[in-house]
Amino acid sequence: MAKDPILRRCIATNEMLDKNSLIRIVKNKSGEISIDLTGKKNGRGAYLSKSQEAIDKCKKNHLLDKAFKMQVPNEIYEELYELITK
Image (spheres, rainbow, N blue to C red):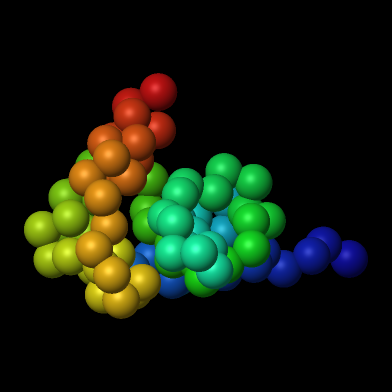
């Protein structure tokens, strides 16, 4: 019997997608924001589609700031753009 895919919602597009097709961004207990490529880091997670449009919308509307209730550094967005262009 095949396992059902684990679905998560993209904060920019509101689409329910397979966890493996999204990028997870994490805020840990000390308030540091990082990109979680393993999907296993501890902390509050937010998921984002692997597309330029989703990252643009997320940055423009400050969706990560809202999800984590703090200002997310621009370096995180730069890392996200780098990830999707590889």
